[in-house]
Length: 60
Image (cartoon, rainbow, N blue to C red; front, side, top):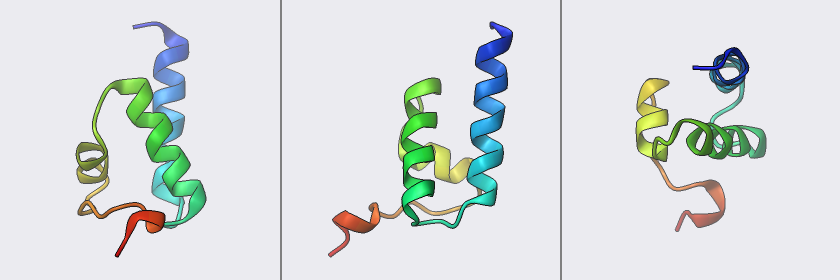
């Protein structure tokens, strides 16, 4: 894997760990990481030790 890919992937994981779950920043980072590594939202959140929930704008 190219070094730039690994650096970006690691930076996104780090930023997600620091972001508040459910915030706009968190949701943007989740989407970006999903697109980069090809994982779905549930898997990314599980990697953070979180349970999946719909993004804030889709909650009922």
